[in-house]
Image (cartoon, rainbow, N blue to C red):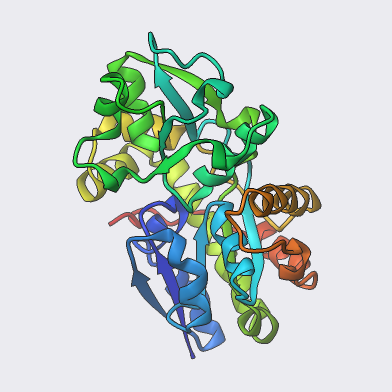
Length: 309
């Protein structure tokens, strides 16, 4: 059989796994061949799964919640360790926004539908506000980069991540209003369709093991990984080195605390009208997967030299 793995640039683990050949080698004994489906928008992951375009994907915390709310039968497989330094809500250093409450009525630029939606909704909720109290805008809605708009006073805030966040801090003129780690755990989340989880659990667990191998490779080859990301995605190589060096590069099976945090996020987003209706996050669990994923992670071997390409 063929397992098709979704890849988009916002998921660094899958991005690097697709370029290392590890999944192909590990899944061959199962009679599986590996196909890679690259796409631009990580928020489409759940839809691509249920349409059968891909069999396995990864995003931040919000897309699987949206998928469940849309009736997609997805299953959580694994998560990364928390990523407290992955992103931040930035405001102009000398601007009028001093607290989260000051965002009320203002335009905030962020990846609508991505994990950044979870961050912003939770930060607003903690301040006694709602996601509906700000004007949400995607970066693509203006030809002017978010940092320039923020510094010019055109927008109230900007949720930045990875190399863009490092570049903004290096440029100066911005202040961190909300550190991601102070509000949410911001884990990378890997999920599949229920039929894949129930019929091919060993394949899914083995794939998680190869993801950890890829993560180990990045952690041990930050300079090479940063150069690859800068050349392929864009940005400054030094900024990518800073961004990648701040990630934990460690995976685990799905913990109860993560399910609880996802449920809290789903409840907040449903009350705010972002989700069409409430969902039960635990419906996306297959508990039999956890020991298989744990076993696969426990037997991860070092990546042979020369794997990077």
